[in-house]
Length: 354
Image 1: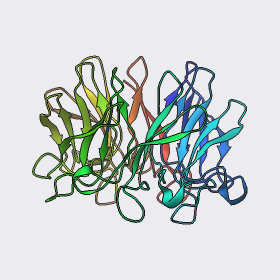
Image 2: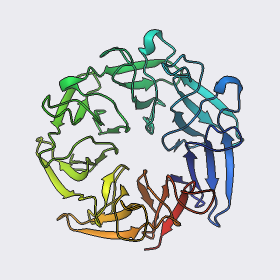
Image 3: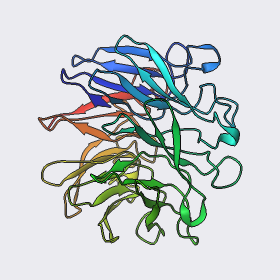
């Protein structure tokens, strides 16, 4: 989620709403929810369907995001290639780009990651598939969308050592270099994913190829970049990648009481402590047998504190990361759980008081 100056939160749901295609919602400080937009409200879901990531906002309170399906692009699944959309404060939705609009989805399809914007109004992100870099369906892209609606593919992933299948967004440094992760590719003996850098000129480098020999595998959450140029992310662990390419595992999740399968973005406080979530694991507060997930804190030395162990009724499978307010309170969402609909629940928005 994102928060405005008045303490309102904004986010997306990947399903539900009056048309079943997901929603954009606003949650007021008193807990009252307003659905700002229902996806798939237009014929053939030309407005987009099933958003899989959060939102960003501009200075005029317009919201921007992506949908994984819908739009007027063809899409290999027949359900559209997804969209990049703008939602105005009055609730008017505008599709800024339809993915899979080009032959064989060479422009990418199925964007499932949050957007990154620069000062010139360009948007950057990834698509999980599409592009021309590998066989039918494509291995995914990094793209740029200009304010005039022109989309440019900055890199077509080719699989193998180059990497493939992107599920997370990008971060940028002050020089305009982009950093991200692929869920597969890299080391040919493992195919466990990569961390990559893409320069403004389009030169792409693999900074680390995961080998599943203690360094992790299949990274899914986005990266975090600190002022010293260190990258932090999760690949069934939480890792730190220094500018010289050295990777250090700060914590490897066992899948038990310490959590399992981290999937959301990380945040850091002024002391260098990291905060995030795992989809599964935790204690005995959930009857799934594999845990309902946790919210964790990691100190710089890698020692872990479990801030919350989900029990199902308060949430289950927190797939996104967390945000914090000035008082240190933590907010996030869960994909399932809660008491809002039938078993296993349709998800929650939660706050952990500092």
